[in-house]
Length: 555
Ligand code: GLC
Image (cartoon, rainbow, N blue to C red; front, side):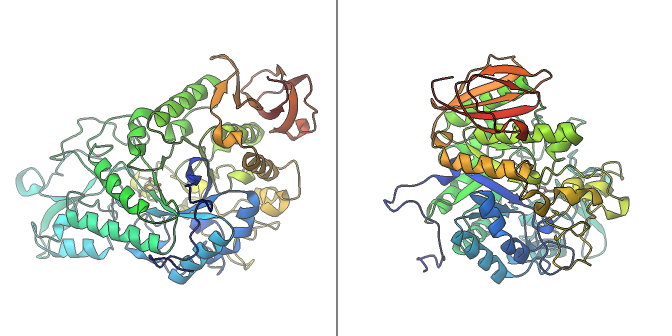
């Protein structure tokens, strides 16, 4: 069945035509396509691989998947350097694979969000090739940010901006006549030139790219570097020495400029013109929760990643204040908060939370905390398996451009991108269909016990915990609708809160066990030894443990 957009199998709201606003409470699973499942055994994950694992995702109980870029790319930055936004890179498959994946996902009730990378293209993009081949001042150059250098002969970069990956954010081009010429801006790798969002042609092109994927049936976009597209008038110096603060709270002339919001107002109009509640999700590193909420105004985007939450340590007081600030600021603009612990750019949270037994224990508790909070939750592939960061990748395996750009001082983000272990006792652990294939990053032998096959029938595994929690979250209406109310006092080592009258969650951040009196049944505990507890009367909640209750007579 197709509609006026030629879209197949759209997931629409309930039959009465009322919007479901599915995105307000959705659990969205991030797939780093390169590392998820490799159907053609070249060692690199692909769309056919993802398609083959949709049943796994449906059984896990997530509502949607977000696929990282699978477009034609030289893969300098894992595909965040796009050379053709309307075509699939051959290493990932082709457009038919993308269409088949969208259709198969929709059949299982899973929505599909794709990445869009509008801040920069690849230097292999036709536009950039045209820009460097054309003379200074020509329309082809106006699509990017090319400027004359400073100093005699223009040999000094136009300003003091630094690349997020290290080194200056400007590279000088060699003009067609062989002389050293203008400089172009790249907030990331030199092979990722920034687009000029003052140019209407850039707007028109991206609006057309949005429509291309919406017509193919995608349910939304994760917008890469959503806070970066507009730069301050005149590209002024920052005057600071410590700019490499993508994750920081500094105010910089190339991030979070007010002009970006105009772009999202137009994009929202496009999203809303399609049936089935298509959404936009901002990857925006705004200085604080209030600035982040600007991206979520009713005529802009639907969600933004909550990076302030990610950056918070395992501390009851700190998490409570970030939870309150997030709910308050998003709530003020009528938007849902999001809760995210890991992604393809950050060290995995098992490791951030202390690694080993402690890290895993806390990660299990954090899963129950996240899934009990009001809003939408992101799960990064492998988080449901309790995968830790791989910190001992051999130098020669490292592919992240940050490694070379930092003069080999920062190992970068590959440790959270190691291919998923699905089954078996040794690499490739079922990641590649053919057991003799070598995954693009080596998987540690110690991962055998963490594979999906090793965990799926074990009720005490973290995979079972995620499945159980997701099932309960889907069943309990208050987890979708009821606001959060705190029971614990600020400053306590336990976070304890209710959603509605009949659901309570408590998380003990330690160091000591805590006695809690909740009248009700234990629904789930992050420590599997506590799951069978009847829950009547007082319960001892050990350190780094979370519990959910069905309350029978008020907490
Ligand atoms: C985003 C992506 C990251 C990429 C960068 C440049 O932060 O998540 O992986 O390197 O943008 O596109």
